[in-house]
Length: 324
Length: 98
Image 1: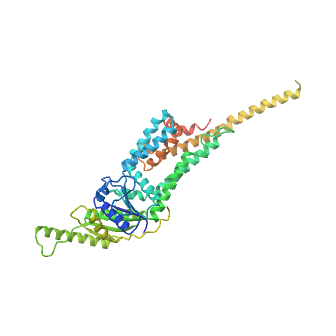
Image 2: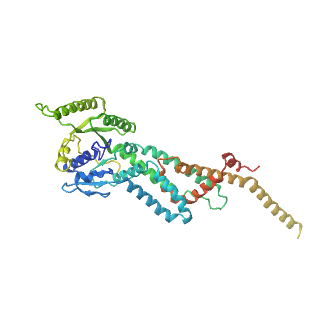
């Protein structure tokens, strides 16, 4: 299977648990594995009982497994700081304020977090030589996955910007009379160079996501989760990123047949509704149901995580990436 | 000064005048027109890069912000042109010398 595996889904369905369990499974099968989480709640830290930040850190007690946690807020700040540093090098003091205002506006627009995460995801994929498999635990909003479908659109946008920039520089060059220095020169234009860099970045992102990534959705057997999953499947499919499989998490355990107390009746009813939901998934949803994971009474970590990993019917064998 | 010299001087002056007239009436407005057109396209470029300056949120602002350090002169001129500009027709009208 592809070297990059994404787990998505509604908030609270257990994406982090499933991602960690799958990462663990890959590592147990001898793959050098990296788990990347964007969960602001830092649940990877809870699952492995160990702090992580945005550098890959080996998971204690598991050979070949590393994990990292990305914080969108930090990424946006870092991006802002990078540009500010360029700004102070390039721009005269009088203009800095003016441009700073524009800069802050750009980073306050909705979507800045998603863009920051998208950048980091692609960065991680680009620098993944040290790993056989990278597992992405995406942020609990549909927007992250939606963003993954955007490279083509963004590439087109950058293309149009480059075209406009080229046309105007070309005209400026033509408008320079005789030996006069034109106002802008095509050769070594830093703006065009930047745009070209971005374009290649989006090209890489589009190619890699299309050829080297597999998408899985985690869901719970309830109606809200089912509906959202259905939408996500359609969304991703529309972007040519087909969903490889569905993972049903938090299934209610069935009580023994001889039990008939209130608790047992409650559980039995729940199990029936859930079974109906699972049936709907099997019959009407395109992607296959690759795992059914029951509710655990304790937090899923340690040996429980190994159990969950065992219940995941997702292959771990890896093909080398085609674009890295 | 004999006649040949005087004719020569007259021709030089005439040529300078003609060249000046040609440049003032034909070439200069043409170059100016090209430059104005270049400015207009640059305005469109900047507007496409930073539509949020006008309250239009854009998914690419986050990426185009990276260009800001290199767009100092353009950005300043852009703002100035937008302040000066009352209407598009006036701007286009400036390009013709009646």
